[in-house]
Length: 239
Image: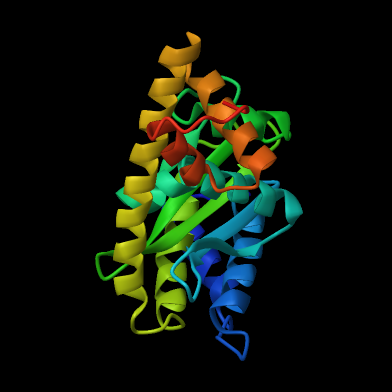
């Protein structure tokens, strides 16, 4: 996408959003159209998605451009780690140059790289100082995104937060705060369980996280339940 200035990029963003009024499908339809816009506007993007809270206060991908985005996002929710969750929790954009080299979210990065995702850019959706969710783009090539793409996605996210904010129920911000507190508690439990497995098996953090993930799938239990069982020292053959 060739543009000459940030103002030109801003014009393109709002031109894309013009007429994107909420219809009967509410936030879900708006999120899907926003994901499609992000995939078009951000150079190098091969997929995009928007994460919000559902009616039960759970984090979910409300709109995306395809199954690969849904799968990558679902893994973040399952593991309790990843660039989208970090952008959402901290209110700060997260950029992954290469999932085969990034060490901030080892288990998720390894799985994403195995699925063909090599670069990620995620920005928070902030309205009136509240993080409503996050918007992200994925790429099949490493180093696909620069500060320029981050600026474009950030501009889109500003407009998206306004659009989506009007579609969310009035109690959504309260659900969001509770959900983020729960997410932080879940992340701490997984981190502690990871440390225990590292000590128990003499392995590194990534291998310990993968062990938790495999146990979660084998026992058909959420990752946080598996982490709790490790902390409670419950005997599990998978661990």
